[in-house]
Amino acid sequence: MELLEKTGLRRMLSMIVASSLFMLVGPMLIVVNKRIMTEVGFPYPMLLSALGVSGSAAVTHLAVALGLAQVRQECLEFASGSNWYYRILPVGFCSAATMTFGNFQYLYMDLGFIQMLKAFTPVVVLISLAAFGLERPSMPVLGSVVLIALGTMVTAAAAPEWSIGLFFTFGAEVSEALRLTLTQLILSSRKFSVVEGQYILAPVVSACLLIGGSFTELPHAWESGALRAPLEYPLLFLWAAVLGIGVNYLSYLVIQTAGALTLKVLATLRNIGLIGYGIAVLGEQVSSEQAMGYSVALVGFVGYTYFTGTRGRLSSPTASTAPTQGVKIQ
Image (cartoon, rainbow, N blue to C red; front, side, top):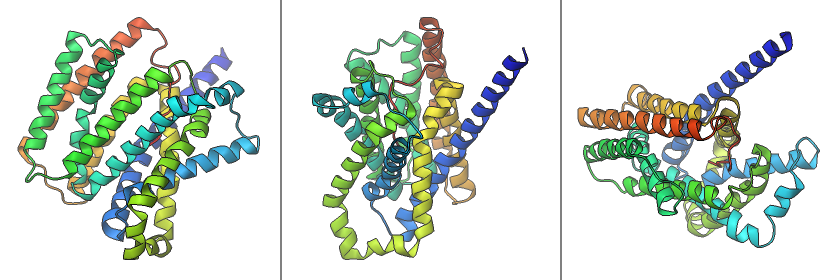
């Protein structure tokens, strides 16, 4: 009995620590990246995104090389040969695209406004899953998605002026939806641990970002002298790399200790916190129309989370605590 109590207490503490860090590290990375791109003078989303992913790849491979972590042989075999090109590379490319578009939008729009637009992501994900025949949404889920879409449309329409940042927001949502769809479609037969996911996917994502950044961003960064920024602000760039590594692990840890449903709820609360930060600290303005639209989208999201979560529990008793089928690298 005492052993069970200790195990339960340990699990609860792990859940609290993982959830708390998830709530802190992600927003801190967003704020740091936005500052690097808009204030420090390093507006290069691909190169900046590569910091955290490359760090994750290096840390994971070093840990495995030193015997501190293990990767199953079956996972290595699965990620080799033609599977690497047809399964691993597409997921890695979509992950890199998500991060690139995601960072680009902070160059053009307010922090809080971007968090409001993120509410539209479940709509794009559902469309993508349905298009590939992986999802048959129920009427309650469809109704919730319609609310999300309407609320987000009101929020976007209430923007003071059209911004190219809206294109990057939509690009981030589409690439994220494709990443999730491909993960479910072609990696569903393998359940990677967080170490295995980072070991296999992080180098691919890093390579996509570095190759893309070398062609599209590095020449301009060299000509403009922006490459001096990491030397002038070494701690800030180091902080961005450390936070990026943390983000790559924390989503999985929250799923492992608290469940996927908790991750969705925490991510939404985190976005709301960033909206408040933008208003209170950065002096961003949120109109009544934007607030109303976002409120409608949140109601839709609550319904979406409830109905999809209920269906998952009915179909599988362990759906909320099962390891993720693919590790999100962000």
